[in-house]
Amino acid sequence: MVLDGTGDTSLLLGGEDVPPVLEENGAGRSPFLLTCDHYGRAIPRLLGDLGLPASELTRHIAWDIGIAGVAEALSKHLDAHLIAQRYSRLVIDCNRPPDAPSSIPRFSEATTIPANQGLAREAAEARRRQIFDPYHRRIRETIDRRLRDGVPTLLVSLHSFTPVYAGVARPWHIGTLYQRDTQLAPLLLELLRREADLVVGDNEPYAVSDETDYTVPILGEARGLMNTGIEIRQDLIAEHAGQSQWADRLARIFGEIEATLRAQRLL
Ligand SMILES: [Zn+2]
Image (cartoon, rainbow, N blue to C red; front, top):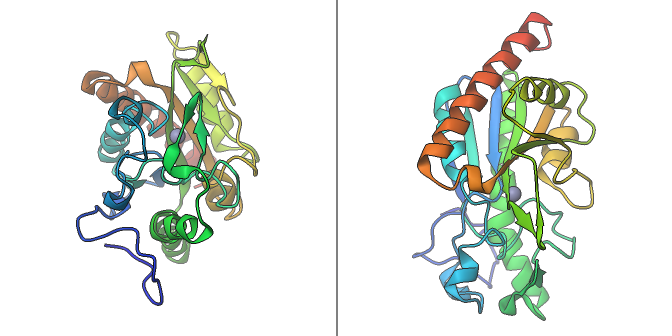
């Protein structure tokens, strides 16, 4: 259990709750460092079902459907370190600045989240201290160690998006998400566009911003790392076969990216 310990009188996670941070392949040799903010949909026992029916807790509003399987397989193929977060983004969104209103969403799409209405400051802080902080601390520590050891590090933040949002169908199969990166994201975009069967979004269906994102701006850009976010459409990776195909495809493309950057002496 990873807890922020001393003086904390409002423990949220108990002995029966899973730790927020999941890691695979910590000794991986790849320059790609994979993160997955919306990997899981666990809820601390203390919060019950957040006041929602089970049908809402398996929807895209609770987590990034399918991305866990892609992230794990990609980590294996690339021999890349993966750091992921197991709790639902309805508990606390690990890709939002903690002071943003959407950090602990009171509504998501058309759904009201009963357990997040009128939340006391201490309760919100407990979610931050026990879920958000340990996850980002672990990524930060990992980046610190890699930089100290002179290990090349490219931050890739993995997400998935719902095929239909608020009644509107989305045409993209995959999108790259970036803000200030001028090396990794354009290269990824170029290689994805060479895949004849794909409709590729350029900062679609979302664009990264300091107001609405955390991992890319704070752990990628502010640390001076090459970085990109990736969003894959959920209907393509809902089942194991799709997850495996997408992990294979991305591993091939990431291999090309690594070779290109090494040839340019950027790694
Ligand atoms: Zn996500």
